[in-house]
Structure formats: structure tokens, C-alpha cells
Image 1 (tube, rainbow over the protein chains, first blue to last red):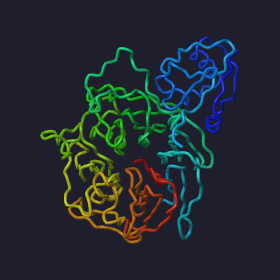
Image 2: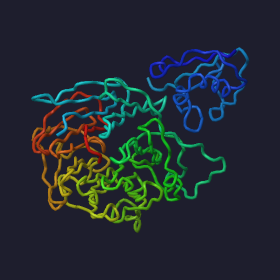
Image 3: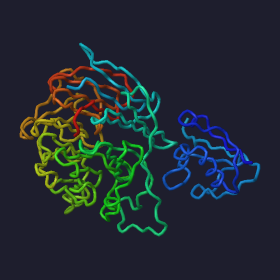
Image 4: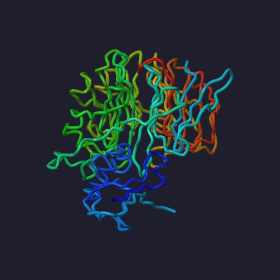
Length: 89
Length: 375
């Protein structure tokens, strides 16, 4: 099972608990998550299904490469972290 | 007269009520969040607030109890862009609009005869309609698919946007919208067909020969007179214009002191000859002339203007008033405006005198009175 976790900054706006889901790619894993928590989708993806410009996804600590199609493969027991792509000081 | 108004700011939504003697801040909602716009629906009393969470995108919330409780509702979403889509025109920026919501820039309730209808203008240029009070939204395709829409350009923003929506109280199928930069567009059939309506608007900064191109105009805000909806006023990037034929043509009004530049305009709901503006030095500086905050008012259709300053700061004041940050109530007697430096002023005598409500709010994006009639 894949573990999907969200930054606490997002939990202030929408319920997004840590879940264990199935999926061979980031997109499949996120779709499984959004199936359970549909309100979260718009906070992470834009209208065209791309990762929002200032968001970041890490798979076992490695940054997502395909922010458009979320096609990066995911190991069966991976941990996916969704965080803000912070800037500034 | 309205006893309630709402101030949308960079750090929350503040609701003001008038007690027996004075106005006070009754409630703060969404404290800490960027509330970019608010709308009060006169048909059912609902409040809708637009939040821009930055990283997390734009979200809408609705309250049916005057702001005590809020519920997140649907956000307008652009449809999936066809894989083989090729723009017919190259916009000024040299890249086509991204089919993704950047900002909710305008709200307007539909007519009294169409409860639940809400129009929403957005960046990058899509007009959305809800028929269920904001529970769902649909992009107006006739406007979005018009090849001329692809020629719109950003005015002060990276993307073009619809900031003004005027629904004719006599016939809710007749709508005028304002686009920066795309001029004024008009529909007579509820959005099935659109035509340009900005003839006479002038942008002196455009290349020679293109100054009057309707689709290139930058109207900062278009406001309609409720009693005579054929009369509309615009605070344009280039100055002040007025239409008396439902936005088909516009006449430029010149010589207004201290400046014809600004963003906001409000029209008296009963008198099409009376309108208010908040001038600023054009156009890179965007501060009040001489450090004095003033409101200009015409009561004769633009032939003459009064400069109103009683109660407003008259030295070292650098407040800028955004396009949605001035409103007039249904009586035409009460006005409210808010500034980028967090000041809010209210007048109860059509602008002759002003009271300071606060000088310490976050930067003000938009203000709106509670109203009982549409438009």
C-alpha cells in the first residue's frame, strides 16, 4: 500500500488525512485518494489536472518529475508527500 | 438605506453594520486568508466570498446566515483543453491563455426572475454561470470560443480577465461585461451570442491607428444605472467614458480634476447623471494626487465634477482604491470605499462628508453593501 500524506498547511483548509491507497503511478494513487476525498483534488491539481504551479510532490523523498501527467511510477510501499513549493524567507 | 457592508481584504472578510449612531466592524471571517471578492445576493440574502489561497488555488465559500457560518462551494473550473487545440490568434503576450482558473474577478446575481443564477468573471477571461446559487458552474462557451477572445490581453495582470458584469434589471438576458483588456461585450440573449460594445473607448497608449480598437480597450470597471440601464459609466485606463445606448457607443469625458485616472466607479441607482470616482495619478505611480484622498462626483452626466474631501485625509495619504473597492447602496446616499493601505471610509450623504471606519485593516480588495434589489 502507498501512503499519501499532506502538508499541515493544507489541513487548515480541507480535510486531508493520511491514507493508504493503491496505484502504479502518482496519478493512480492520487485518483484513489481523491475518490475518497474529492474536495482535496482542487487544492492540489489545477483545472487541467496538472500539479498546481506552487505545489510539490515527493515519492520516497524524490521530487515528482512529471507535473503535467503525474506519470511517475510508485513502488508498492512508497510514501507520497504533498507539500507547498515554498519560496521567500 | 443599507445598514451592512462587507470589506474583502488581503487577510480576511470584514462585515460592518450600522448601529444607532455609527458603523462598526461586526465580524471577521477567514482571518488570515486572502479574500479577493464578496457578493451579497439580494434575492436570497446569501453571501459569497472568493478566497485565493495562492499555492492551493482559488476557492469559493457561501454563507446563508449573514456570515456566521460558511460552506465551501464549487469553484468555476475550465474544461479540459482539447489536445489538438490551436489558437486562431496570437495574443499580445505571445502565448495562449492557460485554461485554468487564476482569479475570480467579478460576481453578479442574475435577474430577479432567475433565482439561483450567478455570473462569475475570471482570469484568464472565462465567464461562468451558476444556476444553483454556486453549487456548480459552467463556462460560457460562446464567449470563450469567440476567436476575438483569443486576442484579449492582460491589463495589469499576466492574463486577461472579466471584472464587470452588468445584468439589465429590465431584461436579465441583456448583459454587459467589461474585460481588461478586451473592452465591453454585450449579449441580448443570456450569453448565447456576444458582440463587441466598446465603440468610442480610446486608449491613447496604443499604436497609432489602433487607439479606438474595441477589443483592445482596458476599462477598469463598468457600472450601470439601475433606473436607466442604458446608461453605463466606465473608469477606463485612459479616462472616464459614458454610454447612453447600453454600451454600444461611449463618449469620453475629459478635463476632470485632479485626474481622470483611477480604477473604481459607482453610479447612482436612481440618477444616471450622478457617478462617483476615486482618482489617482496615472499611471505608473498610482497614488492620490498631492497626497490627498478625494472622491470626484458628477451630478450632470459628466459636464462638471465636484471634488469631495470632507473627512478624508488631505496630507501624506497614499491610499489607492481598487476597482471593486467602491460601492453605493440602493438609496444612493451611502457610499463605502476601502484602500490598499487598509483604510475604509463611509459617507451617508452621497459623498459630501466621510467617516473613517478604520485605518488599520489589511489591504482592501473589494467592498459591497447588502442590497435588496438586483442590479
